[in-house]
Length: 190
Ligand code: 5GP
Image 1 (cartoon, rainbow, N blue to C red):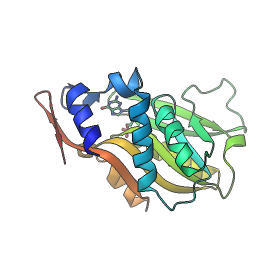
Image 2: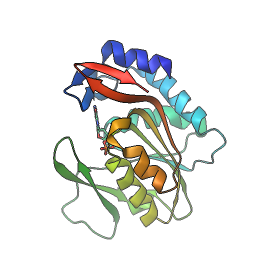
Image 3: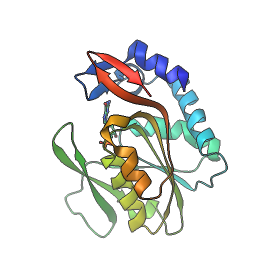
């Protein structure tokens, strides 16, 4: 999506060679009009798919998910929570995602009430890097005996290999902007 690439070039801030900050329109302040366009573009990539639910991770994925939902007839947007409740009980599906950038492992949970066997679930997120967050969501969908309808991403960093891991699982992955490399403060697209 050319408009997203331009916005990243204009407003994004490269941190070293691995991270790009897009606080001005995704991660700290949301450009709602622009996010609507991202939602429409993501929905087009999965046109014809039956989507019963959209699944993302709090917090940055929520806006994109909510603005994609109208194009599928307003399915519920479920967001995995990063704070694991004290009593990790039978009520939750649970999965782990390693953060290569932070060097930490985060636990995510989704209440069993919000995913049902047979649901067709579209995974959406702001970034695809090493694929850990998306894979953690895939594992949760599997636990629910639901189906992954696909993985839709706003910004993919191709050099971190997440797509390969997801495609190895037979999943359809669609990204609106694919970054090939970040070097000397500049972003290069594929
Ligand atoms: P992965 O799990 O694919 O390694 O990383 C994806 C998750 O980490 C996304 O949910 C996103 O929130 C965060 N993330 C990864 N790379 C970046 C980045 O360059 N910039 C921002 N803002 N978030 C990132």
